[in-house]
Length: 351
Ligand code: IPM
Ligand code: MN
Image 1: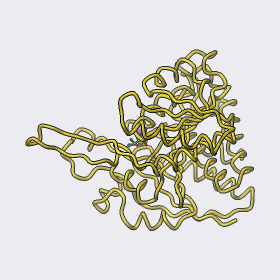
Image 2: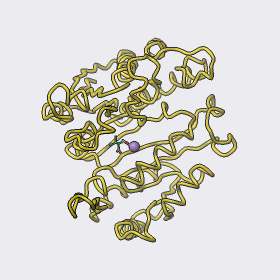
Image 3: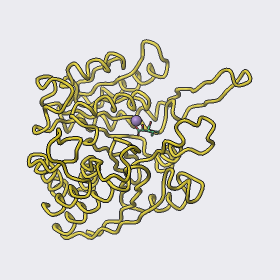
Image 4: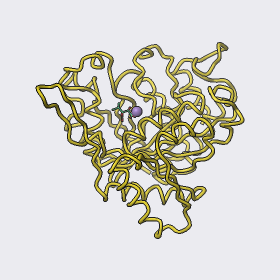
């Protein structure tokens, strides 16, 4: 099979971790007789520096015409403490999600047996955790009306949802639940927010279409608590953009390191695959970042292109590296650690 993949390395540790995912994917392609044509394109602060825009039209063309997009990270500290900056790297990410129609963000959380003691949570609580947070990605407060009034002394952001936006996300959740343990939890704040009440109404209407799925409804504050108390209570969670942003960071530490969790963003056209850890600027250029989340994102990419054996080969080699201690310093517990690129070389060689 010939695969055309857009490669958006982005900022911070993005380029380093992306390089490793490319090495591993090329090794998989070679083993299974595929050919990958990678097309690099600019995003984030790197794109602002080069062309003054965090998601240039040219990059959009590359993404829109690819079979999939592999993405590193976006963000640079020089923009973080400058509220007056007119152009910000994150705007590129939001524009990309919107223009590519990536309305559903799939963020799994699972544990690795060999890393179970790395988690800040007790082993008995987290062992066997396997959940997916399906976050709505192109609506809600991220894209609602915002602004200032009263001479700049009042600011507002609005959480707006249309029924079709909730419906299409929820359907993905139901479909996913059907393939797993048939449990779906709708997470909202329906005791306070009108938009959350529309979520409940929409999801309740869908229950009839998916009678095998057991649906529960929980408030986001309670879920924030239960996620660390008893994550095994959850299987598939569907939730709004901002709630999902917060809960997925929280859930990512269950596995022991934020450097491990992959994600995909899907819509009606091309899908995008990225680690959930972000640009981690303090580590940029030091060859210390953990590449596994990006490598596992590549596994999700193969899986979605119906290349399940290829995806499994990647997961297997990642497990092997963890079991054999071929890990970056975040997982080495003061013991022997390897550089980002050395881990990538080892993975590619062991595919
Ligand atoms: C994420 C990130 C982004 C978000 C930022 C960088 C805009 O935190 O992908 O979770 O809030 O969606
Ligand atoms: Mn986030």
